[in-house]
Structure formats: structure tokens, C-alpha cells
Length: 105
Image (cartoon, helix red, strand yellow):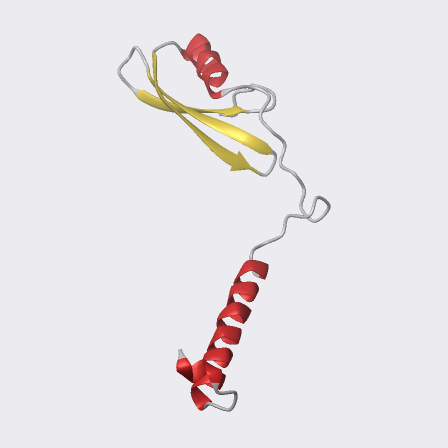
């Protein structure tokens, strides 16, 4: 690296500028990540019942076999979609409130 020994070498200045640009871009990338301030976002309420409890509620009410349970966020919290195969052979999806366990449809 004999080019770096000469203080006025154009190559040395080019390397310094490139390093500065690289370090600057690394800093701006790290600072661009979203910050999670406790007061800036409302925390979504967590479910009080589990997916398996939601499945049991639906199975007790409608009978049949639980095929799938999906979870999604709603404005009020978690909603479980419980898909069941009824004894009649029909598929049905029942929505369950994750806070109360109430059947929504």
C-alpha cells in the first residue's frame, strides 16, 4: 500500500472518500429502522383464550371435526377462524373473539 503513504496522492483521497461514504450509508441504514416507542403505538390486546380453546368452543357448539384454526388481528384484538367439517359433510368457518371466547357469526 505504498499509495497510502503519500499524503497528497489522489488515490488516498479517493479511498478516504469511499470509506466515509460507506460508513455514512451504514449509519443511515441503521437509523432508518423503525423505532418502537412505548407511547407512540397502542399495544394490541392479547388473546385471553388460545387457538385450541377457540376450537373446543366451536366443536362443542357445532359438533363435527376441526380442520384448521387461523389467527388474525382485528381492530379489537385477536379473532380466531375455526374451520370445521360438520357431521352433515359441510365445511363451515366460525369466527371466535380471542378476548371473550364469543362466537362472532
